[in-house]
Length: 80
Image (cartoon, rainbow, N blue to C red; front, top):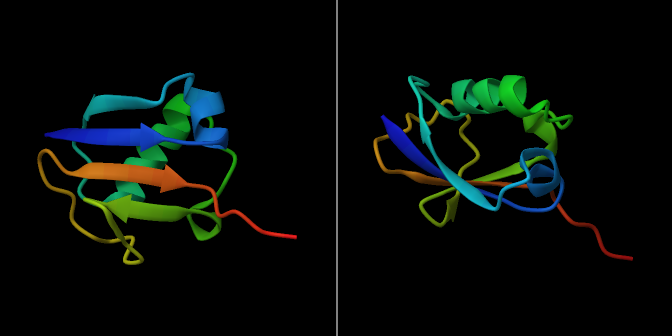
């Protein structure tokens, strides 16, 4: 299955990409993030990030990803 991924902030720094299409066998967000963490050595845990699927925040990390989903990994910003 192919998943469209977009990266911002620390994710963009690690991947050296703003986006990519990933061929994956991951069943859910959790498995996809684990796969990408292994590949790119992400330092943040799933508890520390926000995940958006098809332009909606997705808090269920067991959400079943589907072919052609668009997934964005975001590092939460804090204000001062």
